[in-house]
Every structure is written in C-alpha cells, then in structure tokens.
Length: 223
Ligand SMILES: *Cc1c(COP(=O)(O)O)cnc(C)c1O
Image (cartoon, rainbow, N blue to C red; front, top):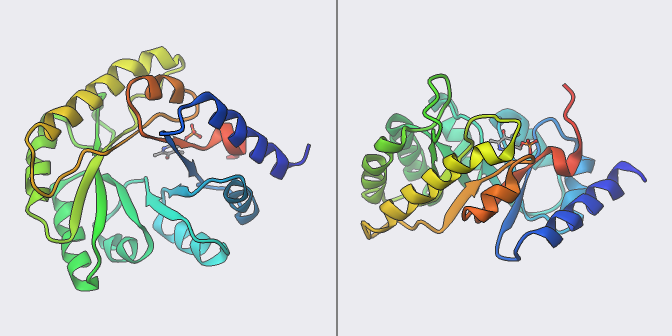
C-alpha cells in the first residue's frame, strides 16, 4: 500500500474508533504537502502546525481550505504572522503572549479563537500555564475584544503508557469545568484539545473534543 492510501486508511480506522462528536486534527510538522493533501482527501478538516514559518510555506502550497491551528509555542515577535496565518491559537501559554496577540488582532481587525495551553503535569521545562494560573488568564481574556477564549489544550507529560496520561486529562477537564462555571461573558469552554497518537483513546474517555494526531496518521517522524 502506498503512503497516501495508508494515510487514508489510518484516518478511517481512527474515525471508526471514536465518537463522531470528536474532531481530528492532523499534526503536520515535518510532513509533506502530498501527505497533508491525502489527509484532507480523507476528510481531515483541522490541521495543526508547530512553527510559524513552516506553516506559512505549507498553507501557501496546499490547494484546499481547512482550519489551521497553531499548536506549538509562539514567540511574541512572530505573533503578527501567526495572526495572519492561523484560524486558532491552541498554544496560548502566557499573559504576555495574550497581550501581544490581542494587540496584533486589533491591528488586523481579526477575531481569533484561542485555547489556553495548560501545563497539566506542572513540568518545569514545559510550556503552558500552571493549572492554578489558568483562571486569572481566562478572566483577562474575558475582557478582550479580539481574542475569544474557546477552551483548553494540554500535552501532559510524555509517558509510554497512555493510562499514565489519564490524571492530566482529568485535571484539564476539571479546570475547564471550573472556568466554565464562572460564566464569563466572552468565554466558552467548548473545546478540550488533548490526546496525541499514543493516548487519544484515554483522552477521549476523559472528555477531549479535539485530538491532535501525527504518528498514527502519517507514520513515524524522521527525524
Ligand atoms: C507533534 C504534536 C502532536 C502529535 O504527536 P503524535 O505523537 O505524532 O501524534 C500533538 N500535539 C502537539 C502540540 C504536537 O507538537
């Protein structure tokens, strides 16, 4: 089977194993335009990229329209380009970045849905806001005119065993409920972006509405 049919078969298989209400996002770092096109042809409508420049090249090359999400850490000096390129920023990980994005969205006259990336494992060298800081950031975002907080995203610690990811997904879901219960006027907790190739089943069990998949769709990443 060639690469393209394998990608399409992988997507169909994953689709069969998760509820229709869960959206798939193709995590496309290092992938080729042909691979991304194959995923689109198999019904994928959400794509995530980690890097602004690579995403820019890819989005200008593909011939389809889809929703592009930024899923990697964003440096503030690239916020302007991110605003031009992406339909959603899932990796909002600090108040300073939120301020910069709000400013750039205002300049562009563009409304931008964002997710707060939560450092659910409280790992020192990881991006994302600490769970206890998410409420304050949500409250600040509630006052934004251009940014629209739409949910939470988390990676969680890298574990071999998907069961070990469960507590971090539970914690993120709990946090989304807590923020939701504040009934902030401009805030929705509609999206829970969690789960990757090795852990998406557990993430779906814990309430993920969007799962970000690379390896199980496109194969092992080299390098
Ligand atoms: C690469 C990546 C994924 C997908 O990882 P896989 O293990 O290949 O499925 C998901 N989320 C983020 C933020 C990523 O960088």
